[in-house]
Amino acid sequence: MCGTHISERKGESRKAIEVAKELIKNAIAEELDIKTFTSKTFRIAGMGCSVGPNTLLAVRNIIDAAEHKFQSLLERGSTCYLPEFQVFFNDQASNDFNQLFTSLSPETHYFVAGVPVSFYGRVPEEVLDKRSPAWNRGRVHYSNSTSEVVKAFEAQYAKDFGKFLEVRAHEFVQGGLMALIIPGRPNGLPHSKAYTNKAFELLESSFIDMAKKVMMNDISLI
Image (cartoon, rainbow, N blue to C red; front, side, top):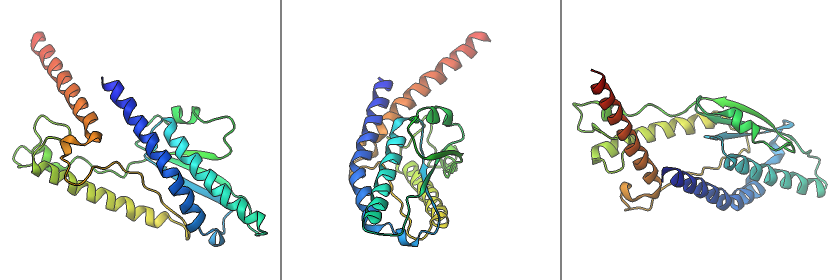
């Protein structure tokens, strides 16, 4: 059941990338200011890349759109040149970058690098503190938790995402673009009913069962 749900989430991610494809293509065609580029290298950062084919598809869409714009300008007599593409794949240090790199097609014509670093903070301290009203006892997620727990995670998210945007602002070159694909939920829909949270509920149930088995094994060894 859990494996099926993960497969469904991968399918949803792919759908999101496909939907964003046209938006990214139009944004690059209309907003990417090639005239301000002084480097012969076009750099792309894939944040939260994981190891599956979806991240490679997203990168391919960006490169295709950029190449199309450069080629269009060249055909109109522009003095610009087709740049060398470099892609920096970023994720947690535990991410299997080797698996990601072996998934690359032999026909890949861009250079890649793995950047193992996280912009996420730790779990909010309040949810781990037994004295706090936001103590998230017996849970690993905020779905079906109290409003205090939800607010603690919301505050942590705002802090982490603010840091993310601040760092990206320092990295951007003039005329650069950023595309964000973020799962969300309709206004008014409870967290427990959001499709993206169902997987965490399944994981939570599995973790609790595993913890109980460990406790039972410890008791039987005494």
